[in-house]
Image (cartoon, rainbow, N blue to C red; front, side, top):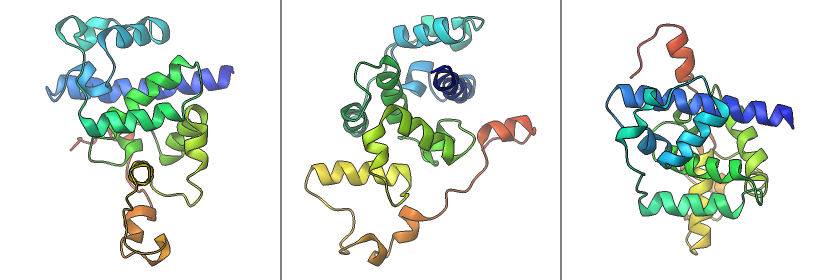
Length: 190
């Protein structure tokens, strides 16, 4: 259990690092960047990072985030597969749904080091959803496939993925540099 809690704290630290970048760049407030309410974000800081002042994230100046329909649907999918009674799983559902609205690979938008960390996070907190990705589809594509299937739609007209002309888009490698590695190496962020 300690390893799991340590990993959760690592993920939160990565997310908060990305959040701070966006806050400092004027791109989003802390609640907009995380999808968490002020109270939830304050709780994360108090419990997991007591040495960090909430002032760094300007929490006194922000309001609770509004979610668009797409984000709400994704959050609902994640919550339907969350570990029952786990506050951390519900919190990660909000964070993942919000960060999935960004344009990069999801692991990058969460500030994680690689796709393997995202897979571990999903397997830990959303085990039935993660277990269904048997073909190692990119996570955002997989989430949207599950949402479409729930509504009776398919993303591809081909009878199976291997025959689809967008196969590489869904199953190709997720290459890229970790945003934290760029910061560590003094490389400017895009």
